Length: 452
Image 1: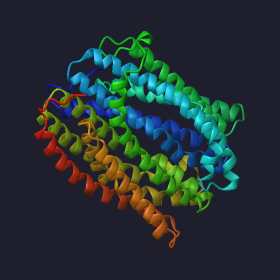
Image 2: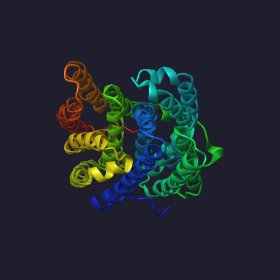
Image 3: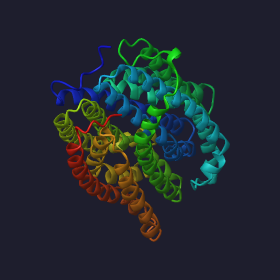
């Protein structure tokens, strides 16, 4: 397919940008469509409905993080095998990852449905919001199989340097998502269940489209139902690489749940404001994260092809590009913060409180850039345990300590938000040190014959 990219030869900077920009656009569009859920219920149902949808974000992120991490493992394995020019193993890895995603999605959907009340009861959600939050959660998790299938199908395309096809599929399904949001809420008078159902349907559409395009592929990542099966060795490798990455994502989600539980104790206005601000500030994160994923794929392929200098150059270029683009985007969002918050809710209190969160988070995003690139590079080398461990201690440990030792004595929104830049700074320092040591060891052992 013409959208596939040769990462093993030629220039790096332009290819990194061509890889990262569609991926960032995919994340931003995905968040816009998620934000549409909150905006629609905020405008047509009320603040409590808006708070209900927003309060689900951290716990849903926690549930999805495990499989998202394993999809990164699939990306690394397939990328490395492509670099090694082993098409038979690539095909086995593709079909293993897609079958695992769908089957795992079914299992987790059942578990989440059965434990939905217990899960949300730990979120300190106010009584006036809880019933709607539970309704949204139950409808959303029913779509887990197709949500995970989309993530893993996208990872397969990314491993071959193609980030445009997932973007096209998401754009198509996302427009349908927004239209269904309006139809279910305004026409059918549904509440949060309407926007959750619209999300499930749109994910189904995007997954079907991606599988269709994979079946039309002419390269080694071509999908065929007749080849579906589980290669235990490759699945084990995907999990060994992806599980630490999933744990890293879960750590972020757990720390956010702790933060969200503290936010919930500050009242529905702060809940609504924080939810709106999150859905704005996250645009900058998707940009910085896209370069981290680009770094993972470039390093993975070149590591498989035994091109160490190209791995190092890709990491340096990704870091520079990511820093410039993320800082510029963060400043633009800061300048447009109030008008953007007004889209979600016109309440002056919600807008004022929302701006507090936006400032604390976006003024520190440069630190987060380093975290993403260092983690992404190490995952590309197949070493994902170290960044996962560092993030567990640096992110989750610092934030939990801050909430229970500092916020518990000074219960203000500003005090709570200081946990973000502090935890990022600690984690960044540790990751840079770990990367420096790991790179030296990796370069020394580069030609030892190790393969996936």
